[in-house]
Length: 84
Image (cartoon, rainbow, N blue to C red; front, side, top):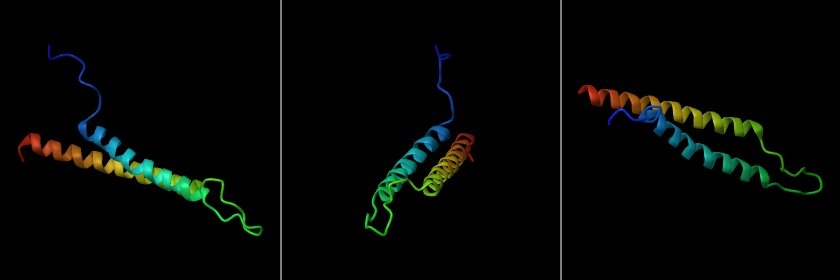
């Protein structure tokens, strides 16, 4: 009975995805919140459009966190299971 579905991916991949979401969602929320705040004075334009460069940077940061944590966790699991 041990031959059933064992889910896809590695433990590092699952943890990496979770950590990327934990880092990325607050960053994106903060960027959206900060871009919504703005001084709407007569000579200053209001900041109602999201800053796409900051959003791209937040997504890249989340991806880097996800990939690095995935690699580190998978390496740690490999070392632990090999007994090194």
